Image (tube, rainbow, N blue to C red; front, side, top):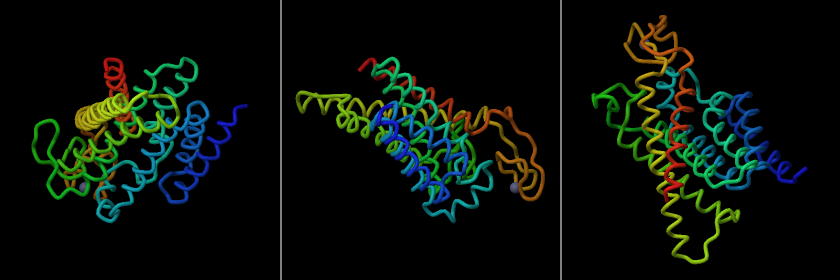
Length: 277
Ligand SMILES: [Zn+2]
């Protein structure tokens, strides 16, 4: 047995255990994150594990950020701040498959795809957390009209800037980590800098596209209810003390499914950009 699996399991146990104690993860979320982290390091290396960690730590930090203002918004969502196994798998499940794919059939294509999926979920999370603090009202991604904060498909300038920042961070981290692990080596500074631009573009373009795809799918096909009292569009079946009415979408097309689909699209886009560049 490879020592990397033991190191991975220990690292994953520390991170997921700490997140559980800090109430960022539910029990099922902690177990999923533990398995995921172990595979990311055991089957992969610090490149895979480090990207996952960057997503995970940054989202956890930002979600605690001015939590009082977000508490009201969260009542409209089906899930609370504690991530469960479904959310953990929606965010890191595709990356785990890519990591295993790369173990059996080594190819840089898996890394491009992986960075695209993680750039998208990071962009989406940063956009949600920072966009929630925006002073300007969100506008609908479908028609540009003003919508209530927290509405699926509502975008703000602050949220979009945060999405781009998160996406570029993942691309930049990929560049650094792959030099650290020796996955990528450069004989001169010029080619290393060119690769930095390439990874920044892969992360930035695919991550931003993924975050917008997430908003768009959230506004069109995601399972959604409307409160009969206050009129808010929400994911839950009860609001303002009354049962809510069904607005659109199938029950299985929940936020996790929308996340998974948009990160899949971002992964494929990143793979395409990576193969051209
Ligand atoms: Zn209501």
